[in-house]
Image (cartoon, rainbow, N blue to C red; front, side, top):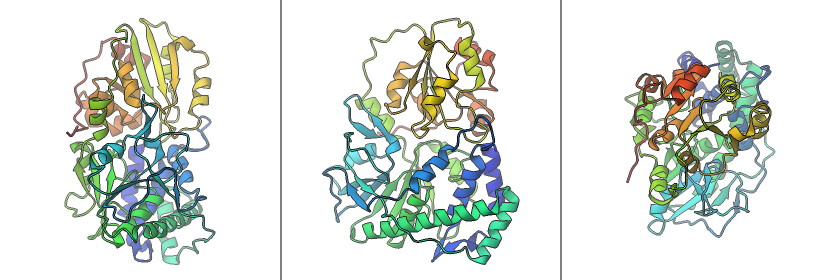
Length: 464
């Protein structure tokens, strides 16, 4: 299902059922149900012959559910402080390797740096970080201990509504109920674990977190809400018009959802507009413009000398994404056909795999087996993306928000596929990005300057 269609269906469901029927203790758990629907409706049809076994959201969810380590397991000399004023909770996927060899968290480290030495802060990751890597800012690992408890049968009134959701969505009721019990169990584990961490932090004022829309972060948000600690989700990628975990919320309770962050730190005004479009008069879960500090930090401190780089030739960065929605092929046919055609100039591709896509490298080798290896290389996605931008003249993606980051570096982006056409409709019409229905001719026209020049995007605002 296309991303936009999944979004519209979820909002239709939200307006067709009693969402307040979903509760655990005094918490409204509709955000958990909504996330399940988002995963199911945007995952690639498993019967598709080209589809992998799991989509990106399924893989992340599976990782969240592997609760096999102790609640706190220090990986560095950084010790949690009961006097903490702020906590930062992130995921290792956002770590970027710098030329120094250190790993830098592109989402939260630029926010932490100005605070070091001035405020008590602690940085956590919700999954294990290899002890072999050196972090620019050390961390603690925050994981719930393994538990054998099971969520009891879903109450009959909730199960009745799940049946209605199944009828509207087409997702089998057995799958929805199973997923709901699994996510509820995970949420409960993280909720009680977070309560244990937070209970002694009497000075705590704020928790900054990333990718709130999984049961781990929902549990942390709920625990924080009980003690009046503010939670802020820091934008990690596109929070667009059709991202159903950010946009399209039409029935927000007066006091909000305890499972959701109080605020959303956004890169720019478009993200804020998308989040508020369905409920502009809300008084909680408010977006604000924080900019993207990582870009500012990189430009001030890390831009490499590129005087050695030849100005000849076209170097195309292709940021790949795992199959999702209608995007079932990581590298579409028109890219392969272009590489197999008679190229007009010296052209090379960098295929950068998504860090969560474990099958991407082997896929690339199979997909590009007939292509001259001198015309491309494969980037594992662990290096600093902006260092790769410096090497590139053009950027292509299905619908990754890397397109906005590329624009900040003056690199034009070509989007492809029906999902991108929906998601970036306004930007395409305004000339911020080019779009193709996956035609080799469109790609050639764009590369060789036969398409109009692209405008500068204002999606990301740089602070400082």
